Length: 177
Image 1: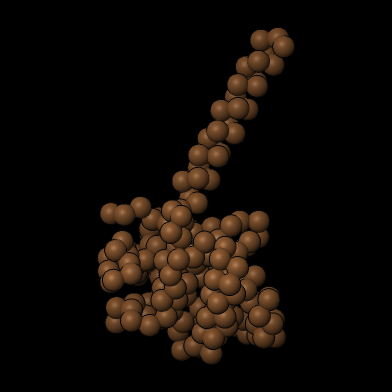
Image 2: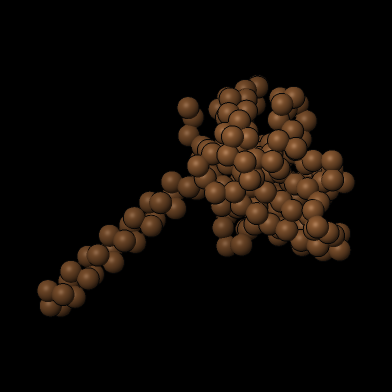
């Protein structure tokens, strides 16, 4: 190897190490994600399909979502703070102030199962003839993940599961405050 090849090799190795470290930082803890699932009134009919996704996920223990491993520890549909609504979560997709409010509600929640709050919300609605799913981190600086499928596609649980994966697979477990 000459000097340029050696230098290039070192940079490639350092870049690979940084990418691996960044991936590990977003991979979350072995406990998995804690998610609050909230739909607005239009999305309410799809709560059952999301519950089926959770059941399918837990049956396999860890789901392979679009070549990302998804590990979900808890998904709450009920017993949420009264302010944590589907309307707030859907509005938080496009409104920074509501996004910050949602983030505080998610991360400050505590109960016997969650001692560090929710990592994210999975919000869902029906809009323009599509079921829209939003993966919203408790960290308001993180990008909202959006996935959608037609109402006809939403009737197929496998397609629905893929759409949920797209909305949550890149979310990460937040460190305890």
